[in-house]
Image 1 (cartoon, helix red, strand yellow):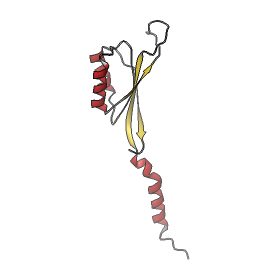
Image 2 (image 1 turned 60 degrees about the vertical axis):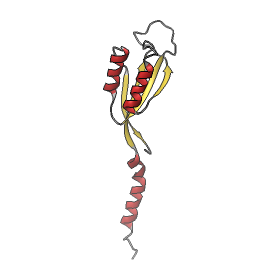
Image 3 (image 1 turned 45 degrees about the horizontal axis):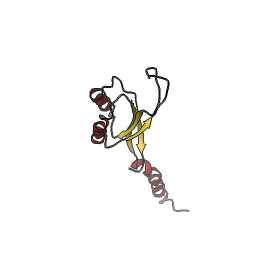
Image 4 (image 1 turned 120 degrees about the vertical axis):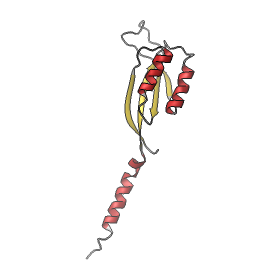
Length: 119
């Protein structure tokens, strides 16, 4: 008769090894938004500092695009596209900052949850 006393232990060990990466992944909230060229470049350093203090950092890149209210037909790299990952949803804080300090009437922002594996 085979010894089956180790089967539950081996099964438990296999499950731990399979689920370990998911246990170490952290949930994060990703904010993607555009700061248009109409915002003075003199205001961007203070905004960037706000993002570092509030969210711990950011990624920004020059971007272009057009919407119904975009002036002219020529597309230029004149906007800044930001990506901000944080432990919680900061969309209200970011939108309020841009409205109050940068004069934006509206902010186009996408927010979604993601996993940060290995953290």
